[in-house]
Image (tube, rainbow over all chains, first blue to last red):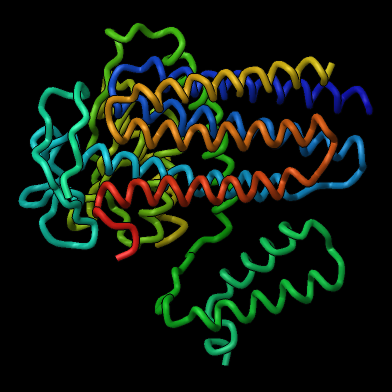
Length: 141
Length: 163
Length: 89
């Protein structure tokens, strides 16, 4: 394997490992649910991205063929990670926050997650807990 | 004629490219099959996509992607520094309401995705009338600056691309 | 040199999986648990890719692709279930 490829692969592997670890560490360390959402959705995306670039360079250098699967996985992760983050944020808003805690968008309107009607409506089965993340409420059906 | 056999040219092109990337080879079989997929799938799914997103300046897309990629790398370094070294008591999370000038659903979707992928911000909800986005910031001593940054850096460019 | 870097990266992602597991067991809210599961799926994808480099085999890309799909769909359906009490209405 040429020297430049070895350097590149090593560099990207180390970056990937560091960011992946920081993402998971942030999930444990950060204090409340909304801030926890920030660490993994970003750092892990770059972690996986680094690993994919390393693997692309590695297979190009050893076998001489350009592998495009990695690109596809990267694009897929970049498309889906905002959607999962949005859904998890919606779950948090639905269970933990009231419209009073949030800034209002404009006069006479609210956020779609709290609207009584409409496609983005959430079903509030229990009142939001003002005490924060201390207890897990039962989901009553 | 074109509306009947090629209702969504962009979707056809995307399907063609994704199939080629998936099979990982450029041989005649895979190109023919990718072309068949690119033709047939948009024709079958046409009733579900009544209107087509319009791109007024598609040439501006690569520049936008490069800016977002650069911001993602910077974002990761900033968020990593905050996660590793900032004491919990000095962390200032904030909710920010970003009013939107964009009106097309595709443009708003791209903007929300961009906000989630970049520095310490996650887009959480849309206003009932679709004229504002709720954004959560990991560490924002000055929420107004975050809002102005999003509006000037991403929304202005998306407005050029989509509208 | 790549061997050392690979060991380091695999160690980092494995440690990350353990930290996620801690959050999954401990996490006070359902949203934390879903987030921990999603991060576990992403870390597992990274481990699969590193495994592919380690063994020099391209078969792991299909596996990680499938894992990415299943992880995404399962996260979304957990969230849907909590939000609407139903997955497909």
